Length: 466
Image (cartoon, rainbow, N blue to C red; front, top):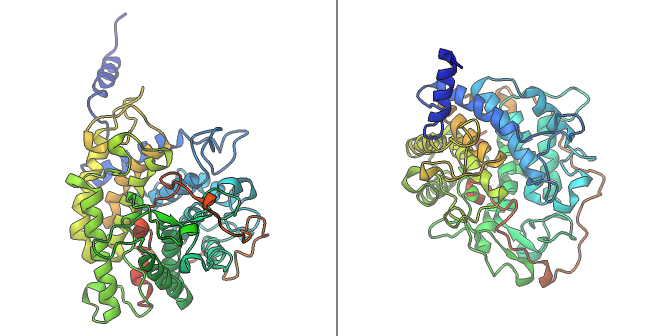
């Protein structure tokens, strides 16, 4: 059989794909095209929009599939930002359906059917995606559905309640919500970092001091308890309530490493580099230390590496997503705190290039793995690996993206300051904590890029200056 010239071209491309990436980051148009392909490939792992599927979630949880509920929230958050950076609305209907379907009976992202694996960080990932939708003016839901801002406020309210912030270890959130869950006896950086993040961003968006007060209080507790190292600003995983949180597990995840460009008090201004007050300088110093440590630790040779598990091939499904969070949060940090851009942006560029370079696997020659620094596909892909590379690529468009809005600067999302009352079905009931409540927390959603600190709220910088 004689092949046509086009067939020869396709055959040659297929052979080359084993050694060369099909993705290019040479221009904004090339970045957008690469991001669109990565978004498509990531969604090949999603079946919630198919007949018989459950909108919003990836296949799981184990043993039904690889993914826990929270990762759906992370994926939609990534795609909300994809829409904002690229202008591509292809997946907006899927995002809307998913984000509204999973709100739960109390419209606070605590659906009863995920109670068995519901952590404060899991709930927060959906709340942060809703907050992002409000900040970047993602299309508002129909009038009879809860607004993005209201959903974020509902998540915050449930987590700010005395039932969640109990007196053990002097304060702070536990990892898990229902007391029956393994991990209820563990307090960690990821849960408190996510809460900090939402508080700081809600303060910025609404101008309500109660949110910035909670952010400040959360930072102080995390630092006092020792989850943030005051010397080098490393962020550690967590500790057991039964031991008064003195047995700190010092494993570090990239997801903890960055997000705190700050949780400042309301007096802070958006222009932290020129701010003169002691409070401004305090938060600028914290941001500087977090970024310096995070870049040095999680971007060796300027390429993202998940140091907690990648070097020994010990990464679990959740951990495949972390690099993407780090890229997203660092990128947004450069918008909210421009004095960080000179340090951050060159690293994100080099890391994103390394990420796409290894996307040469699978039958289509473009599947992505975890080990970006190796320069070659590692043989395993999934929604998390694709999500991380997508996040790294689309974040390169941050320089031309509109900064997050507030209520006073164009925000239209409907709020609900009383949200989160829920139906009480998965609120924790207090009980004595035993040593058996321990959790070996290097798994599931314990990380959040930006280091608990990263999660700790990139948006807080502006929060106080309003």
